[in-house]
Length: 381
Length: 192
Ligand code: SF4
Ligand code: SF4
Image (tube, rainbow over all chains, first blue to last red; front, side):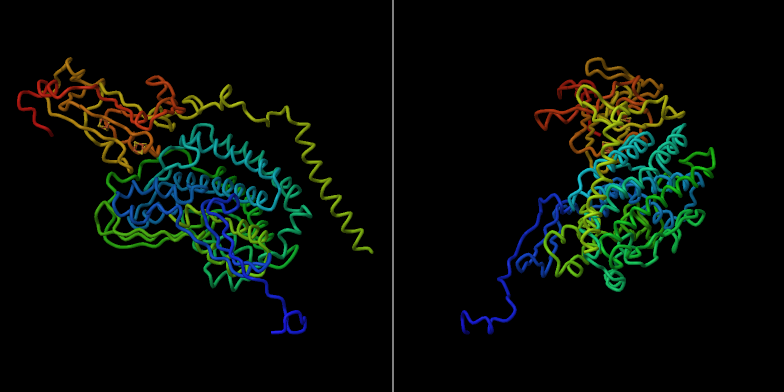
């Protein structure tokens, strides 16, 4: 090889460098290690290493009774515990053939949607932080705090609720819940345009996220990505509408999808935008539910004395803020689950990271990872 | 050329928009959106009057407390705890009899006659996950989270910390020696 002769060198190939991001890194959203192979600053491969937060949820569930599983489902996706509870109890009720009182269904939906807003607020705020905008993060946390206050008023806990029980909910709504909730919505809804001004439509933010990390619909579907990430790629799929569980079919809401307004369809900006729109839709659902919620009745009426489902198995999926959350439960007729499997939407979202971030710069990988909105507690379980 | 000036305009206007919002919030700072000075001030806890009609609801998550005079030692709370942080030991004694030696009252405030002497009732609050599952099945309503709807029974305590991990294990049963237990349960005090 003729050293020094430029002609013969061809395209310059710098030495590949392996860079570890994490496990303790503020932008990995938990304890995740990314092994990034870089060529200069261009990333050629991203290998996520998970398991730092593994708590044996599935195995442990095989040694505790069905009602004791619920506090553990809280801790899987700790940002959206209500939705995790919801998925589990919906699956259990289908397995046991329990019809819960209508009021309970309404309460559950209000709680799940409130938690969806809280979860999206966190995701969007932290995403702003990832790409270098600090102010929106504080604004969103301020509003999220108010949702947590509502939860605290309802069940005493702020993050890990153990609120939904098989066959009911642990507490009825507090007396003036309706007015508190409406107050919050009246306060919160005008804030969304402000977030948009502050962050979504900010030129720097758009430059940073539009056209970055494009996930075409085929890639998203073939990897099994779901939830806002999938809708960001323009696929109109929402379990709440397409496989309605609980009483979601009673409500009128849109399913926002990405449009590629500032760049290509399925880029980071689209995923961000879908979450922003979803918060509005959640507000809409809550308002409808508050208007039509039936009064009275005991929320513990259908709670079974002993949870002992018949032999059999069930797979039920629900729409958590991160996507398609499924529980697969096998019962052998005893009080303890024979097998419990949780299908986590964040895990599939993480698996697509390598595919969509190859060829981008290191700082873009952070932006792409943030836009997928993963929660490590749910990935490792 | 045109693109050059558009870019300049866009960057300037986007900055101004952001600054305007920040400024608006700066001006409105008196309207309550300021940080709370935590150790001096605290957010109010939900009280019973703003919360529920149903007084029996345990709408609070704080330190657990057990009224030992009311505990009949039925082990329901121990069995339901998902993390096994409640440890109870009981001994069979004469039903409904007071045993002042070991601080045992025979009858609970609900009028139930106790047949068991609880010699150990430990709750490891470092393990507790505040799921509130243990407070529901208790037949005597003697295990509860402090404060909130239970503030008449016990003051709220949610900021408890210790220098030693072992001090986080709360021991509710009265300290008893083996001889005391043997006397209380009769000569051949059989363990249950
Ligand atoms: S609150 Fe839950 S974890 Fe804590 S002692 Fe009671 S049952 Fe156990
Ligand atoms: S459930 Fe109540 S009465 Fe029974 S052992 Fe626990 S605290 Fe005592």
